[in-house]
Image 1 (cartoon, rainbow, N blue to C red):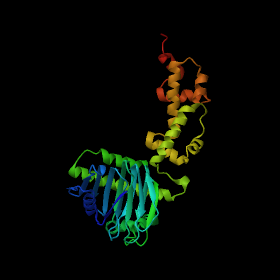
Image 2 (cartoon, one colour; image 1 turned 90 degrees about the vertical axis):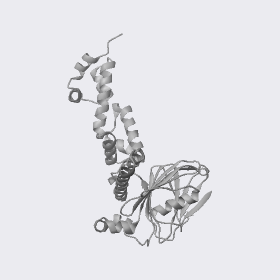
Image 3 (cartoon, rainbow, N blue to C red; image 1 turned 90 degrees about the horizontal axis):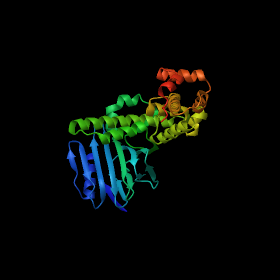
Image 4 (cartoon, rainbow, N blue to C red; image 1 turned 45 degrees about the vertical axis):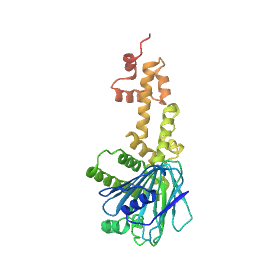
Length: 341
């Protein structure tokens, strides 16, 4: 394993020290700093950007040939770090602790060290790790946001009020789909210079806002949580497959939510985010899609079609079909039935 120490703050000095340890240059563009990983170390880049109000962002997209430990150990109070593992895996520990916390894809952590103790990040060998670290200098951030912090919830105050770092803090969770989308938008943005910097600053603030909302959501009881985590998209996908395969005997929405491991509110929110529909509206859309296929391509009776759709009322079937296509099912069949070859 390779290891080196970074004995500097603020962010711009951190990037310069990283470049020296890696034996390469740090390219400066106003308040943006970029390092290309040398071939003898691996591949990828490390980028840092300084924004207003004590906010900075370090982005690591790296694949190291050997396991690498970076020790941020300057004898100063360190920023609060909002860590997001977008790909690969990472280990974090506090400088004064042997406890190691691992982050993998979809996981995030909020970390604040005690006193002037630093942070240690360990990158695995031969694995591309995409890590973003949103860094908040509490003293500067508190000065900028003092009035608003004073009026915030105790949980939010707890993150930022300890500007002298009397206590350490560690929170781990699964970042939300919305936060994930912000990082994707950052990666895909094509403009440069002023437009890029303003865009990145706006996205950094959106990520911070999303994280604070998520943090408070995580403190709520499990059945009351509403924020959709990125990992929970897989549960929404599972629900969609169940709907498609089991229309004929589909269970109630509450049972469907429990089956895929979500509460009912979270399942509904997920469908609204991903499909702009409620669960029941999505089910109706799938029923009508299947009805159209059966009317056009089979000779089975209307009763059999209703059974395939999981419906028991012919009048209700006719109503929802007519509301969608402005025509009755039987009339639709006459107009669209496939002609024999």
